Image (cartoon, rainbow, N blue to C red):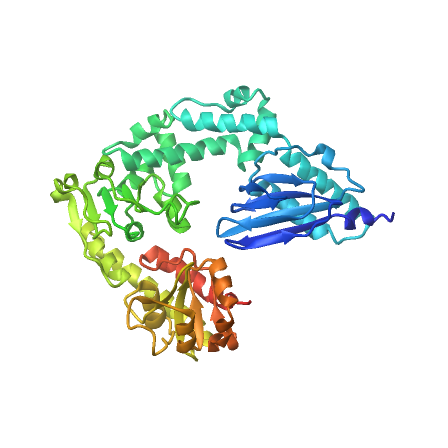
Length: 515
């Protein structure tokens, strides 16, 4: 056996599987595999056995063919494969592994990927050392379980005096060992984690307890010195606690199926309660990722079911912004607080909401600044998209499991942005407004020069694109079908609109559909 066989026998890959798709590994029975999930959720199927793939978990497979599928927008899995014939690792692999944050192990995985094609003796030795380092990182299960217990203790005892020495004692470890393993598990030092949890708890208290003072908040999160708490809070949030408290003055609740908290946050006000969609955004507490951190401490109301008036009022709002609801009006208990209630009619553009909300909270000047900033960004993106938009007419689709939605020329935030602001030319035969459900045959008859597919699950797109009629569409024949990653595109609010615009040019240029 040549020396470099020790290296070439090992293969490292990064697999990225989008929601609804599968990746099949035709591995032989002569190979072993180690999997690590760096992001997302999914499952792998091995000999009819279905095993969940959760973020930060590792899995050892000593049998042949297996299938990996994604349950979230994107599942990323690192896989190390090696032959059983010269196996030196399996004896050290456990049935279960420690959950290790990606920041702790991705550098090892990436270095393994980079160095696997090197053939020098030093490279072979370095590769082998990285493999052992990876195993050492993921197999310290018992101690990692103790770290989890300490994390739970911290989160449930934030009002107590907590020292790193006491935490190490609870884990039955020396301070040095505890700090090292805690950083490995949580991605930061114990002291830093304790501070972050206290700041999160402080924000929640300030949002949910009316008329609370910074001194009272400090005591509730286990900090006796009000001035130290103020310095600490400012170093993490950029403003002192007194400044943060102004973000909830006035105390506003949002009762709507729209993310009007986007407008409030852009105006510098954090609502005490606001809608969420847990099934749409399961990984970010029911809101788009770009709003999650900004809404920490806000009571998130489940907009997928009827709102509960008592829950809303428990946040002690001084005013309630409400739009018409799909499931009918709220119960009378909410309307006994008419002095707090501000009814907003449904609007046809994002800035109409911004202007009306700005008047309610006394932020008209800030609203004008936001509109100017968004307008300048729209002009910039319009110029960047000229090579794509200067020729041809467009149809915009949302491909769903049981329908194809064809969007019209106006009265929807996305198409208004595309056709009125960014230079897209609408196909003359699309609806004048809103959307309508169409068949694939009707899409073929429409025969658009260019297609833009938004929000669609890859499984549904794949199914449609493999139907014979699909190839008859002019946009498909000329390769002018665009399918950008648009899962969180929601331009109804200024923050969401800005996020979309910042991503739009690159997403379009990289998003041509390839089947």
